[in-house]
Image 1 (spheres, rainbow, N blue to C red):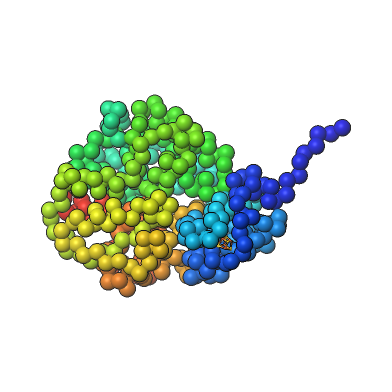
Image 2 (image 1 turned 90 degrees about the vertical axis):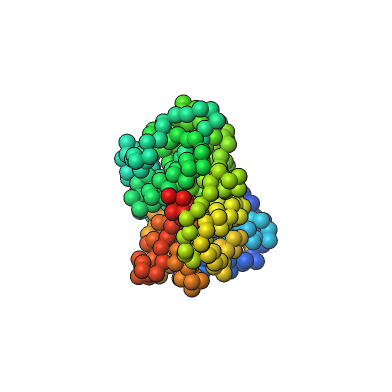
Length: 381
Ligand code: SF4
Ligand code: SF4
């Protein structure tokens, strides 16, 4: 008698890949009403959840790949449906039948081959820090600084990592650079539902970090921060993890950092989804900005818990949405309408998404994107 292979229905598959909880949905449609996609095109989140409940594959599998994992719907769902987990499970399922968008397939191939999503050479990972002469190890209480792959391989975003290290060092923070053999934190791989590759990359990092003696990790990106605190403990990676804005804030509070030079600029701050909604860090970045003399901070109407996603998360940064389907373009317009000359953020993805949209809007002479560390460094240098 042949071995019997259980045939799993779609809802069973969802449960198996972590998307259980979808049955809590009672179809109110709040998620669809709030999802930022509906500011640029139609996207029925509720229908997608309902389709999965019924055990059907969505009619248009492209919809499964739209979610930017911004968390706005999750934060407002009256039944606390883990909508992002459901989306991730649906991606895992459709991915199994080979329906990954081409750019996502290329990203995953690069992750498997080079350990980063940008097809960058693994040996060039730490090239961004060449002018900083960072040590490759340190004392047990020192921090290991982990730059985002986007900073490692995108020459423009790289500036933000350099400024972060300079500011933290100016405040007396001792740190070393993450080992050259480190790979991507795995956040964007995880969001595609590629469970096996995510775990392989995570375990590889845990091993490398252990060899370098890391107990405390400073991250440049909110996505790495989120991965290290939420995913890595399952693979034996228990660390004290901080996003750089938290440590910078402590240094400013204690007087170890004192920005002195006036920077006369009107700025606005964009809350990155993985710093704000996913991890509740809203005040520290703003306090860092306010510590710079001369700066006027104006808020955009959508801020803090209501912040509009830049569309970089959930693998969207690799999807290259058409110009008229970019939330980042709307966000740039909001910054301009608020009267800002500088759009500040604390995430390499947001940084990159906004720079693209500023070019699309031909607003380069009116608005500049900066990381908070670049602003603080301007006042210290
Ligand atoms: S907001 Fe929650 S309960 Fe309402 S339709 Fe969306 S997932 Fe279902
Ligand atoms: S997480 Fe954000 S992008 Fe994804 S469905 Fe919810 S609101 Fe839309």
